[in-house]
Image 1 (cartoon, rainbow, N blue to C red):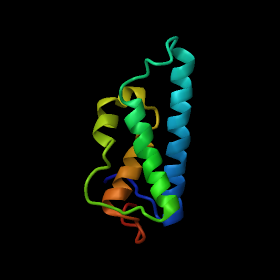
Image 2 (cartoon, helix red, strand yellow):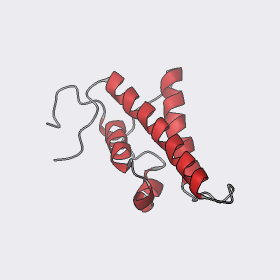
Image 3 (tube, helix red, strand yellow):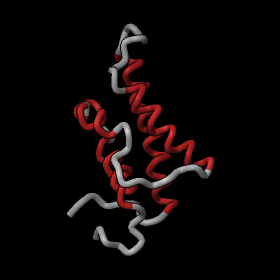
Image 4 (cartoon, rainbow, N blue to C red):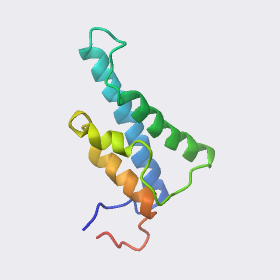
Length: 107
């Protein structure tokens, strides 16, 4: 069985909103841990921009589902040990690729 997708547009929007919160929190953690604030992990900025772009597109009514992985997923998978909310990103990606699970197929 695959990952459970969002069952409504509202649930999907909440997942993306949570990912925005999580990536901001991750940045805060790195800022606290890193003495030189210009030395963040290479994956952080593209991940942050990608998640926030999806959220912005949703808010603007421009978001479109697709069949391909989200642009930041390969980078997220390569850095999975440093991303505590990877499971959430995988669910967002699965919903993006396969659409909303309105029929409860994932159960």
